[in-house]
Image (cartoon, rainbow, N blue to C red; front, side):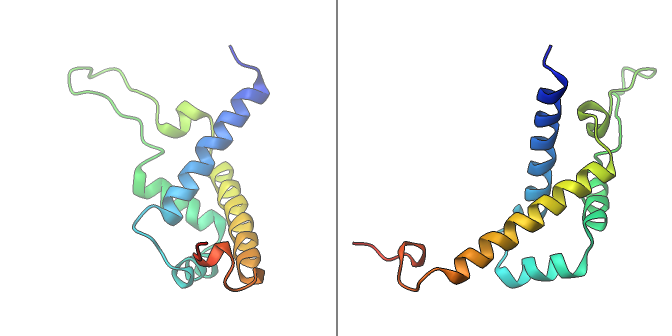
Length: 116
């Protein structure tokens, strides 16, 4: 069995993946759409929307297992809405930093798609 720190790292990776999928997963959103998402929603709001969209808080059971219930995604990975909101906060900070670096990069460099 992994250590508590290992389990937290796995949980945080799962949460980061959920946040990234929610923000970037549907098509290829442009910079303005992502900025609008960040400006129009707090991290807790984004977490609540992701939980509702993907039913992360709902356990389920098979029809033939009337009295058994599988844990929800949140139960299985041991997180709550506040933990998911923290993942959105991490993504928000890292995305803004990448945006800042991209805007500061000299024009015509490798980031602009030029080839030798």
